[in-house]
Image 1 (cartoon, rainbow, N blue to C red):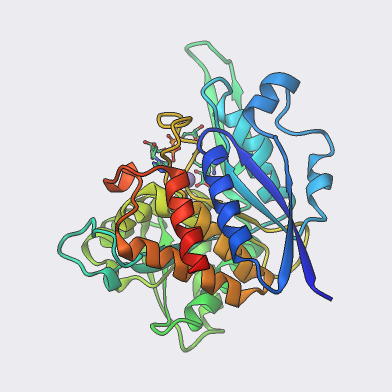
Image 2: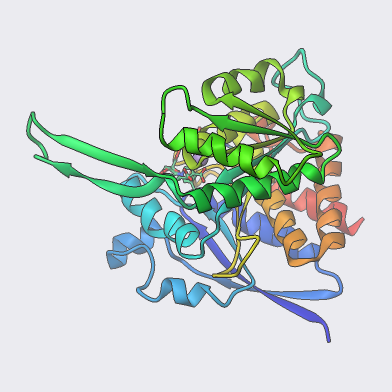
Length: 354
Ligand code: NAD
Ligand code: IPM
Ligand code: MN
């Protein structure tokens, strides 16, 4: 019997509603030998403005049985970001315990190098971002609010189990790559509890992977190294906030925020479906104009196929995407071109059918 995958679509807000249809169009053209059904959900900030919440009360339970989720972006100027993101995106990551946020930072041949002194092969990193705790734990509070004596406390929460599991996954990824190198983003020179434990966990897990060479870099120096010596970096593991920042920097190395894709995974147990999404946000500055770059969303959809076990389809999708990029005729404005989101998606579909 032919496999049928059930995908939940959460385009969300702003350009999420433009790049997800583009990725779905490409996904549909890639299907061969298996079926995919799509169920769209209109949850997000407009839903919030109508209903006073980001998703229905049983939203998490509604999503749980799906095979995967393809998400655009959340965020709208009329809704505070700390409400919209925490009640939808972060909630899904936390409730489904998607503790790995996997973010490739790679050059697609044909794109101009941001770093003119470097070659495309010099930028090939895989970020493994901790995705369920750390600086995003949401523990804290405000005291004497609105007075000159106001106090705000935002605690980071690092657990031995939480650090070890993401670090172990990063070592496994490094072991599968030709260079077998892992860099850990730390800040143990200033953060004497959490980051010293982080470093200890890295050293402990390293013993299980004698064939992987591991280096710890303070996160500030690591940011500089990404620019000065990107070729020295292979797999990089970092906390929720550190790797959030470093991966937007990574997208700038690739050439645009519109290129960076990500997968939110739980590689060891299933508490819910994995989530695939571009790294970028809802980009209110360009939303509604049909000019957002859909490459990140298409790449995320290819990661989704790969994760479902449809490696051949994922490879077909990526090679069509690569061919259109290498051809250099169709480019959205963030890459210096004049084409629309839709024109780019159509070019990839045409390439798939060629
Ligand atoms: P952003 O990523 O939305 O935009 C930053 C800049 O990059 C903007 O100038 C934007 O036009 C450009 N850009 C981003 N994606 C692009 C694309 N695909 N094509 C062309 N240009 C692109 O970040 P921001 O401005 O800090 O955030 C805007 C909103 O998105 C906020 O509400 C924020 O909280 C939210 N956000 C959501 C997610 C998510 O849902 N995963 C991620 C990041 C930010
Ligand atoms: C990302 C985003 C989110 C994050 C925000 C919007 C909460 O920036 O996916 O990188 O920080 O995780
Ligand atoms: Mn981010």
